Length: 263
Ligand code: 23J
Ligand code: MN
Picture 1 (cartoon, rainbow, N blue to C red):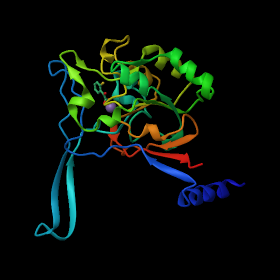
Picture 2 (picture 1 turned 45 degrees about the horizontal axis):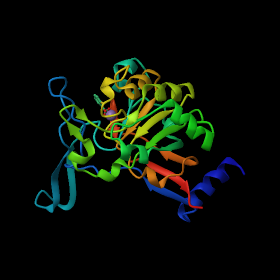
Picture 3 (picture 1 turned 180 degrees about the horizontal axis):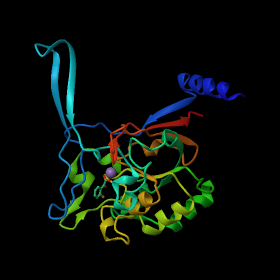
């Protein structure tokens, strides 16, 4: 098959639903849960606001449109390398400078749903990734690794989704050695269903917040608040992840699409 025929076949297979498109994004709105950093340590992102400009009325008789108040790291979103101090110097590390071919890549999905249900602070380790590889093959370079926890099923309830107590949020994420191992594999990015790419208690790891610190130090990307990872196969999907082209953007809300084989 020529490359042009491959492209045509792709479009045909999507139209016929031989290739299924799975939406990995949550709905973005005023009740979208956002990360809550300790206010004595840091400023937080304000809740999403959707403001009506007109709705087929005196403010615009034939049209409806809104303007948004929106943090870069709100809802299902992309983390760019310059988001973290360890990645601050990458010339191709902001939402407007990342090469666009990096927005289409295969995904490996590691099912941690049972572990996360048993333990909200569950940390995926390098050993557990190696077990996954024994079942599904080696993690390929330039792939996304997505941690399935079914955390998105907690919905937009802050209480359930952030799951915070006096010690902060309790949500699953990667152990430091997991991220180190995945970087040895030269993955493209790391994705999570939780509010951020790191565990709720990830501040206490070494380095603190290893998914942020180590991935962005290596000019790699993150995806947070993913949904529907339970609809993906462990291997064989392709995900499409272009953030908004925000000037010097550190991240962006995003519509993440997965292409999977229907058969
Ligand atoms: C800023 C500081 C700490 C964290 C985060 C942002 C995120 O999780 C994020 O959305 O990138 S942990
Ligand atoms: Mn983020």
